[in-house]
Image 1 (cartoon, rainbow, N blue to C red):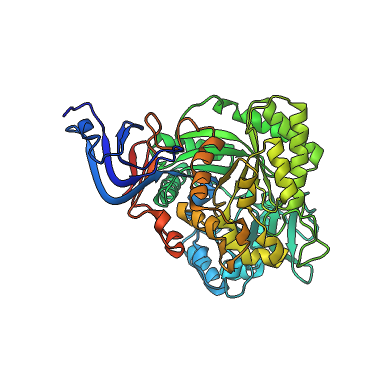
Image 2: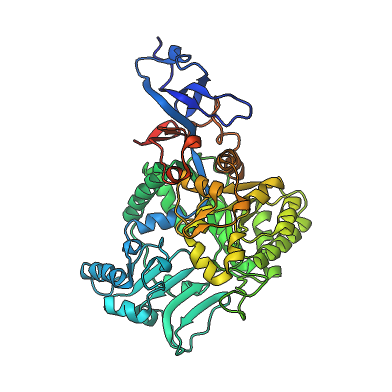
Length: 535
């Protein structure tokens, strides 16, 4: 034996490397943060075992690469670690009581925020609370209720602080909600969010780092080793840097710096100036991926070609004027950054492809993968073919569909909801497609996403079974394809000597699990950079 061998040796029933054509291995050795060697013999790496080697004998276990969540919101998850957990409420009285209890322990005048990962249809009343109801929970604190990334409800105190009155102009690309009598109901959507959110003080640095510690560990516990966080402000990124330096990140982060709420190239240029200090970093744990744009709304405001099922006079909204967006995207790519754009409805997908085609024509020779479509929810066959022809990668989020199918059917009807996130069609066209959750709209989890893509199961049953893909294809979307999207294809996505030691250990082979078991299956260990981050 030698004392200069491996730091870790794993012996397992099957190590699926995801290297094309390679049979399952039985032993894997790690030194530092890299994979050192593999062997088809469970004892084939015993010569690397020394006095300082940790050996894990795991008969019956299956090893896979760690998964990527290519479109999620770690920042939201971290902020929610300290917020009022309204996702636990079953009805609006419970919802309000959780806020009321927090108010009792919060000094008057201080903001109260809620978690964001809840859906109103999960409440008995099947609707959002109103400003008037929030006033009953507390009229001595401003209250910010968030649902996902596109919707807020605030109480009257918060409306007064923001100066929002019956006469306040509605920001372009936003909604200021009103009740049936035309009075303000506290609802704010998309570009109206900033009217109130700009007033909410950020948690202090220590609280935010602790939130990232908790949230990143929760992602890792489901088998996720890298996240692509798709809405990170410059201030958020500074906190991520501090969290990395404090050793608080259990997972790798690829950040999209947010241009959400912006409507001009000049605003985006200012953002790019602030990003200059983060250029040219090769940190494998944390780095900026590019810039995030939003072209249309979410569940209740995605831009569609046909009117909504619930309102035949409404077809969602586009947040950008297309020519202005092309100028803004061009400003980003000319500075050498990548762009990911939220496009959910089919009208938004068409418009985005027009914008991207214009940018590509004006900037020949852009590196592959510079322009990415986030969601592409209702992309039809012609739009998918056009995206492939233009070389535009797409990220899809089956957990979003799983968790919100009932909500979405109310807006778009069952036929359109069944066509959301057509993974089968993307793959068959040879698209550069990868997968994620869109937490807090969808629940994150490696096998939760795989289960959804292979079954098309939702909270109200199977929707669009013709768009289902195989287990093997689903793994590829979260590993090989995801690493390519992140620009890490030479470091991650497969298990091979010299690559980062990012892997998951499962006490059974997920490929053999019944679908209802697979959905909630978590690994027994997640290892990132050779470090055991879950036990």
